[in-house]
Image 1 (cartoon, helix red, strand yellow):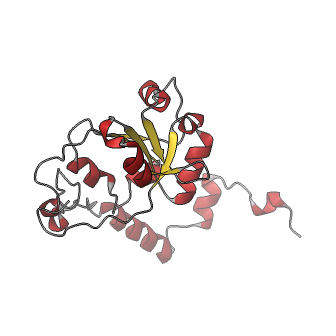
Image 2 (image 1 turned 180 degrees about the vertical axis):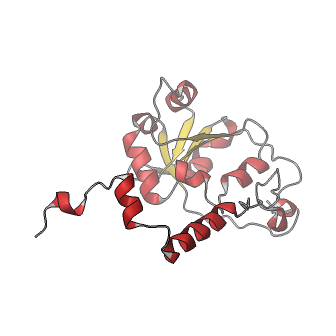
Length: 199
């Protein structure tokens, strides 16, 4: 077996010139090919025009299917979004934000959250009116809470973890502040109207 030094020997410029003489036709051809490649213009890919409201490409804009005016809601949503969700093509958080008044849908991107870096989120988690939408053995059925405790009369905050199931689980388990609010889950499927006046 050859030793490593003979396989990875350093060649001086003079030795290189001797081994790769100018009379070799392949060397001139390679230089020409690489020169031609380097001279090619760089094509900048143009992005499709995007709708400013729904953040979808204009050709598939969903605004005709969204409410013409923001929905009047007393609840304030806090969407804690895994960074991978930001770059997804079919993300739904911009659609949610487009349906609600400004300030009612707050999006915070990250994996780890603490009081020092996210004091507003920490304060929301400590608020007794805050609910976190996350299934588990301690979670209560949101629809039952609405029916039995007249939850609509109180202005609630709702935290939603946006990510795949494994990302959401990881974010919930690794952020102790998410264990403070009451956990809720939803089981009912809400029928949506189709058309421009549907929600």
